Each structure stands twice: as structure tokens, then as C-alpha cells.
Image (cartoon, rainbow, N blue to C red):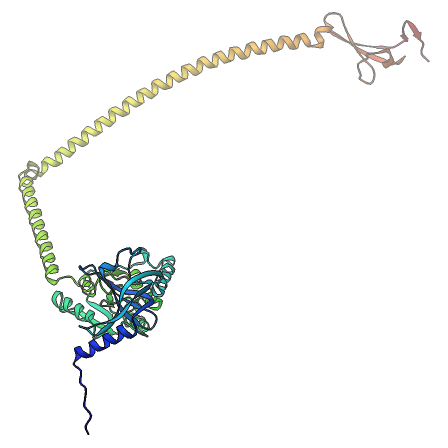
Length: 430
């Protein structure tokens, strides 16, 4: 007997799974990290709740957001309460959240902030170390997935703007385990190859975990040590990664990165045309001005009669010579007058000085004469010297029968001491 085969259509199976989940599991509390938070115009909030190995979609309808006390954003660690269900159109299971609580900062967000702080303290984000982009690069290196939308966007912009530019692709994985190592090695490889003017490193949009390889330190270090300027083009405009901070320039999207690297060919051609037009106009104006000046100068009488210029210079030279002679004559006359005046004043001062010196000599001579011993002798005094040449000041200096010399005002005489008396007592010679 043949068994009856039960065949479900897709909608029936989906509805059966939905009913089973809702009845068997019901309401649950789930803790995880928010990512890919989206808010359409309806006001409902859609997001992903994930941990290190799994994720589940979630939705918080606008009516259940009343009383929400914190911002729902990527990286927030939350606890949600709601029923597990299935979104029938896509067949994805999800949790219909009716209550949500903040549980702390997410693990990925914490790692992101820790690495960001570390690199910032090292000066990796400083503008002084950022390298400028070349004006018109001819060789561009791209580090991204070979099959990703980012590469298609970049090549599309390049082909429209400057189709003859050279592109070097280093294909890598841009998410998942091992992606960060591949990206870092590709950056180092393109640097070692050389000949490239700029690098574009990035991928299209995605959740925080999808973009996480661009938050790895190994990728940041490769960008920092790159000798080639690096443009980081990761995700959408609202997405920020560590690569964006350490790169020489951040582009909001891969397409924008291509636009920053490759200017429109017609814009360059128009710029060159404008410069050429301005240069031609400036040269033409300079030639016209020169012609006008030449027309004025060629009719000048000096050019008609070159001798006139020579005669003018000779007259100028004669005038200068006469002025110099007059100045020298005036200066010499003044110098002679000054010299005579100085000599007269010097003679007057010398005479006054001579008279003052003579008066001082006369005064000193009078003082010397008054103090001279000869003046005392002139008043009847005398000076007696013994045989030893000492002035006799006391009878104790005199020896009987010795000769003495007496000095008077008008001469000297010698005598022999007959006797010596002290205090009216006579001392007879022995």
C-alpha cells in the first residue's frame, strides 16, 4: 500500500512553523548586542540581537516604545522580552519585542572603543601624520572583495570619469574569520610592489559584525605603516570604523572614494582649457602694453638724437663737480675758522694756567722759606754738631776736649769744648 505523501506549499509550511514557535516557545527574555538598528518612516524599530556566535532579528513597534529611556543604537547590550514568531514574507524567524531594557555596553562596541582610545593616545589619528592625495593619480590600488558591490561601484565611477587609469586589485575577504589578516597582508603587498599612487580599502555596507574586520588592530597597523596614501571606504555614510580614523582620508562610500581619487576627465580638460585661455589673454595683453610703450618711447627726442643723452649726462657731471668744489671750499673755510678759535681759546687757557701755577709756586716758596731752618738762624740762633755729625740737643751729647762745629746764618766755625756744665754745675775734663 502506497503511503500518502503530504506536500506543503511554502506559505503553509511557514505558517505551520510560525504557529509552532509561537505556541511552543511563547514569550521569552533574550540578552544580546544590538546591531543594524533601523528606523523607517513608520516609526517602528528594526534591529538584530546577537552574541559571539548567533543572531536573531527583532522588531519593536512604535506603540511599544512608550517609556523607552535610552537610545537604541548599534553596540548597545540589551535585554528584550517578547514572543518568538516568523515573518511569513521572508520566512525569517524573529522576536516581537514588547519590552526592552539596557544591559550595558556591547562587547564589540567595548572592543571598538578600547582600540580607538589606544590608537588615539599613540597619535594615529593626528592630521599631521596624514599623507595628502596626489592631484591626478595614474595607478590606483584597491583592497576589497572581487565579487562585492564596492568593486563594481568603484570601477563604474572610474570608467565614467577617467577610463585610461590603471587599476591594481588585491582581492580579499571583507568579513568573517581571517578577513582582517587578508586585508592587512594585501595592503603590505601593494606597498611592496610599488608604483601605486593611492590605495582604496573598503567594502559596502552591513551590520557592525559584518564590518568588524575593519575594526581590527592588524588592519589599522597596516594602514598606518603604508607608504602609499590610503582612503578608507567602509560601509555607508553613517558607518564609522577604526580604519576610517587611521586612514589618510575617509570616504563615506566606495563610490565616493573613487570620485575623490579620480576627477572627471572633462573637468580636467576644461580646467586646462581655462588656464590656456587666461594665459593666452595675459600674453596678448602684455604684448599690447609693450607695443604701446615702444610706440611712445621710439618718438622720444633722446632716441632721435642719442647725443642729447650724453650731453645731459655731461652737464649733470659738471654740476656735481662744481657742487663738490663749493662744498669742499666751504668746509675748509669753516675748518680754518674753527681751528683759529680753538687756538685762541687754548692760548687763553694756557696763560691763565701759567699765572695760576706761578702764584701757587710763589705761595709754596714763601711757606718753605718761613719753615726753613736758615730763617731761624737769621734771628740769632745757631746749630752745633758734634764730632759724629749729630746735632747737639743736650749737654749729654758733648764730650770735653772734643771739637764741635757751629752753624750760623752767614757761615760756620769750629771750637774745642773746654768744659761741660749741667744745671749750673761744672763738669771738669778728666
